[in-house]
Length: 126
Image (cartoon, rainbow, N blue to C red):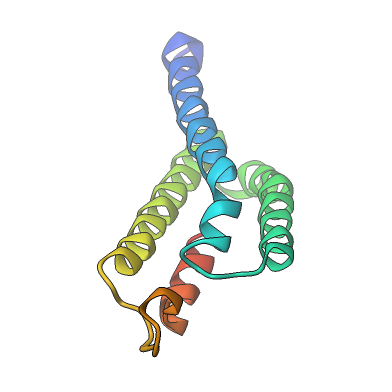
């Protein structure tokens, strides 16, 4: 057989380990980020975290359907990994925009909130 074997197994294992590190890194820090720099209330942040977690948990069903019907398992893993990396890059960009000071004007420097577009970028990248 010319497919499968340890070469393919290492590819899948490596992708999965990287994905788990990224997922749990985001999951552990998301509530703090939403209530801190994004200025959401704890209740709103909890709703957003649960929505993200539920969506991330249900999306593998869509990925399985795409893999079985259209792309195959390796192309699906590759495409999903590229989308994941794009999302992580956009998360980093949205956090960087907040850090460098792209926030709405406010009378009090401590209460400045991120602009509408930075919030859109953040939630789309999730």
